[in-house]
Length: 455
Ligand code: B12
Ligand code: SF4
Image 1 (tube, rainbow, N blue to C red):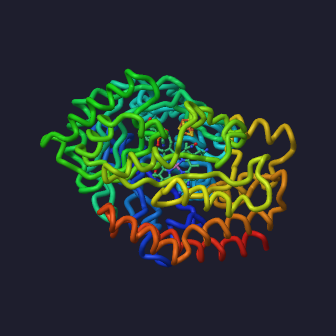
Image 2: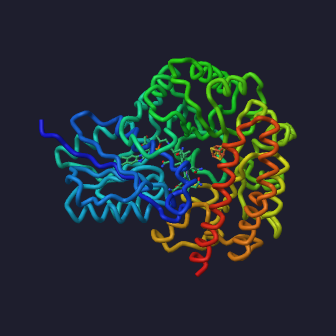
C-alpha cells in the first residue's frame, strides 16, 4: 500500500510570553505539549507517517521536510493568524489542509475560507473518515465530530514529540457543567462531565515519557459526589506502581479543598500543584462572571488554600481584571486578595470575549469588542492584552492596573516572604521560587509587548 505522509502542526503566537523561550529560560518549563495533535495521531492508522510540529519550539524549514499528503492544523483563537499563514503556504504547494480544534469550531466560516476542510468539535468520530477521503482525493469541506463517546478517546501518541518538554500531558475527563460566562469549555466540550475509564488512563500514564505531567482536564474532580468518588478512584489507581508514579499538576475548582481524603489521595497520586480559578475578589464579580460555584457555602478561601497546601500541593490562583464592577485600584486589590488567600502563584488575565462564549455575545451586542480587525487581531486574544472596551478603564488604564497587580504580587520582598513561608512549611520552596521568578521575569516581557500594542 502506498504510504501516506501527515504533518500535524501547532502554530506559534510570538506574543505569548511563554513562547519566548529565548528571552527567558524559565519559560522552558512552561511550554506545554499540544495534546490535541497527539490524540489525532493516536486516531491515525499506522500506514500514515506522522510528523508533529510544535512551532512553540521553533518554526522548521517546511521546504526542507518531505512533502506531506495532508496537513492538519490545530488552533486556539490566539493562534488563528499563524494557522492561516501555514495553511496558505501548504495550499500553494497543492497540499490539502484541514483545520480543527477550538477556533475552527467557533469560527467555522472564517476558517472555511482559508483551508480545504474544517473539522468542528471533537475529532474522534470523524478523523478516520477525513484520512480515508484524503486518500481517495474526496476530502469534504466540513466534518462535524460533535461530542465524542468518551470510550472512543484513543491513547495519545506520547512517543511522538519526544524531546524538548519538561511536562508531558494527559486528559482524563472532558466537559464542565459550570458554564462560566468567559469560558469556552462548556460550549465546546459540553456540560456533561465525561470520564475516561480509569484503567485506560493508568495505561496511558505509563506511556508518558516525562516524569512530570500536566493533566489538562478543565475540572479534574468535577462537581457532584459521584464525580468526586471517581476522582478518588482515579487517584488511588494513579498512586499504584503501574501508573509510573509521575508528578503532576492539574486544574480544579475550589471544592478540591473540601475533602481531606481526596486531598490525601491526590498527593499520594503525585499531585504537586493545582491551578484554581478564583476569578474575582468580590461576590459581585463572581456573580457577573457566572462563577456562582465559588460563592457556595460562604467559603473561606484562605482556609481552603491552606488545606490544599498542607498536603504539599502548590496552589496557582487565576484572577480576571476588567469586569464591569471593577474600579480603579483593582490591580492592587487582586494582588492583595491573592496574597491574603495565600496562593503560591498569581495568574492575572484581562477579561477577554472569546468567540463562542456568553461574554462574546454580550460584548458584541453592546459594541464593546475593541480589537475586531479579524482575523489579524486574533493574535491579541491571549488574555494578556485588553481587547475589549472596559467599563471603568481606558486601554492605558487597564494595562497600568495589570502591571501594578503583577508588580505588587511579584515584588522581591513578597516573593521572599512567600519563600520563607514555603521553607517554614517545607512546601516545595525551590519549585515555588522558580515559578515566582519566571512570572516576575515575564512582567518585563509583558511591558515591552504592551508598549508595542498601544502603539
Ligand atoms: C492545555 C491547555 C492549554 C495549554 C496549551 C497546550 C497546547 N499546546 O495545546 C496552555 C497552558 C499553554 C494553554 C494556553 C492558552 N490557552 Co488553553 N487550554 C488548555 C485546555 C485546558 C486543554 C486543551 C487540551 O489539551 N485538550 C485536550 C485535547 C485532546 O483536546 P483538543 O485540543 O480540543 O483536541 C480535540 C479537538 O479539538 C480536535 N482537534 C484539535 N485540533 C485539531 C486539529 C485537526 C486538524 C483536527 C481534525 C481536529 C483537531 O480533536 C481533538 C480530539 O477530539 C483547554 C480547554 C479545553 N477543554 O480545550 C484550554 C483552552 C484551549 N485554552 C484557552 C485559552 C484562552 C488559552 C490562552 C489564550 C490563554 C490562557 N492563558 O489560558 C493561552 C494561549 C496559548 C497560545 N499559544 O496562544 C481557551 C481557548 C478558547 C479559544 N477560543 O481559543 C480554552 C478552550 C479554555 C477556555 N477557558 O476557554 N492552554
Ligand atoms: S472556567 Fe472552569 S469552572 Fe467555569 S466553565 Fe470553564 S472550565 Fe468550567
